Image (tube, rainbow over all chains, first blue to last red; front, side, top):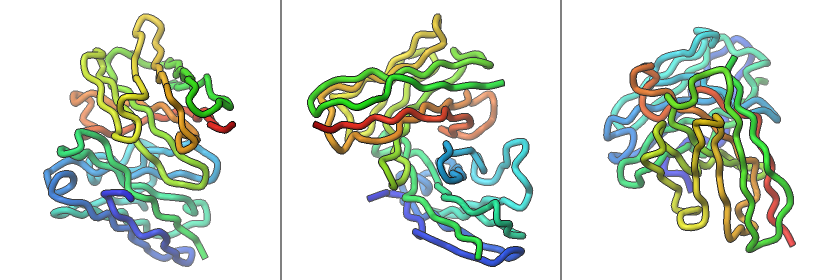
Length: 111
Length: 124
């Protein structure tokens, strides 16, 4: 059971906006540790999508955005495209575990 | 360009050992902390271990502590994961990933490049 909680699935039609939540606790997100987001397309390695809560690596479209507040974080995807269908994971660091944590992952379906 | 190439996976019996390697190229290996992350079939990502850029500190997930050892050889630009006393629940694709230094301003413990993974199957 992940200490970072994500919804198992979300869906949206092309062009719509969806958000994926990531809920942590006072020893990880709430302790001020950064939240990062990864996209994993089918049968491929994860790819860094958002780092440091809200920053996009070079090459990631601005349709993807991240935010963080308190013990939670969110990934928003606007203008949904078929190619966005993938699994999305949040990740942070936990001070009490002295280790990295991943959320359980959210499967995005583009209807 | 940055490349991380894992090797060493395969089928192994419970209780046996296996060593994974991750060959790094296209960047200054000694500047980056390195991680192992695994993914069981059909499951999510699970962090396994980290080694600091200078090799001075190593940390492990509770699920592998005492059985797995992460190490690095900067002269060979290679990361390793020694896995002992393997169990069926260790069956997974194992990824290596790099973690930029604070000076690169990527936040704490972000994994900016990943290898393609190597499959470890623990079965009798």
